[in-house]
Amino acid sequence: MWKCVEMRGKKAHATQDQPMEVLLSLASNFTTAPVALSISEAMGGILALTAVFVIITRIIGAVTVPPLMNLLRISGWRA
Image 1 (cartoon, rainbow, N blue to C red):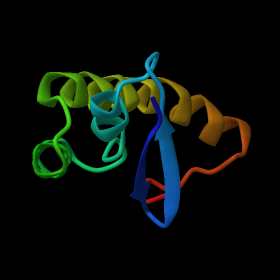
Image 2: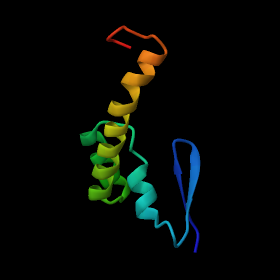
Image 3: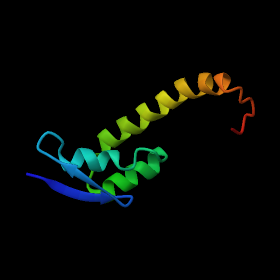
Image 4: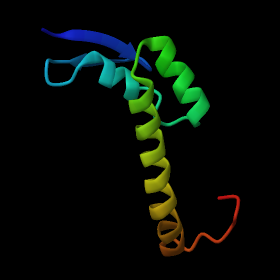
């Protein structure tokens, strides 16, 4: 059975392999943790899964951004 939800102007579809709760948990992945948890709770997502996705996203960013900035010769700390 297909379910559909609209996030940020785009429609996301869930199948039996991807329950709607998982998609809703991913919807607020690129915000701060408290905001992501609030959004996920309001939309009916799984809070623990949202927390894991947010933490993993932050770790990947912390590991990949400094070498990328060095490669692009960006040295400003505000960048």
